[in-house]
Amino acid sequence: MSQTLAIIKPDAVAAGTAGKILAHLEAAGFRVRSLKMTRLTADQAGRFYAVHRERPFYGSLVAYMTSGPCIPMILEAEDAVPKLRETIGATDPAEAAEGTVRKLYAESKERNAIHASDSPENAAIETAFFFATQDRIGL
Ligand code: CMP
Picture 1 (cartoon, rainbow, N blue to C red):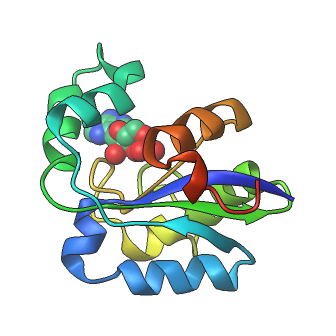
Picture 2 (picture 1 turned 30 degrees about the horizontal axis):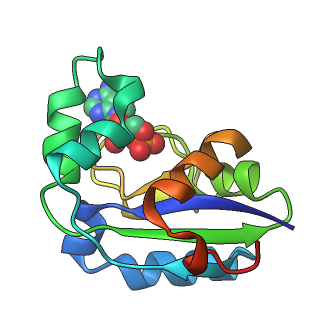
């Protein structure tokens, strides 16, 4: 078993689809190992997405991610990182496969309902970003 980090983003929380997304992830075989609701500050969102700092959408991305509460969570499954990327679908919902979380719930390429770590290394970094050691269940 391995773990990854997901965030149900502010658009989905505001739309009231967080529960449906959580149910979708559990039905896909993920076990929730930790979860909370939080509202990111601009500093936190900027640091979380620092890799995108030079991209034209960076300012808009930080504004969106701080626009309301989000729900970071630790998910566990076999091959959790690639399995979750497949379950959520492509960044742009217009390109996401049928039945994926983003196809079902995302509004746009930016307001795309959910984030998932793109590698085991980043999963460890992003998990530590949101969860204290005592809140990381099953490690
Ligand atoms: P995420 O998987 O969390 O990683 C980076 C985020 O930046 C992405 O989801 C989108 O929310 C946003 N993003 C990526 N590409 C674009 C783009 N071309 N235009 C606007 N937002 C984007």
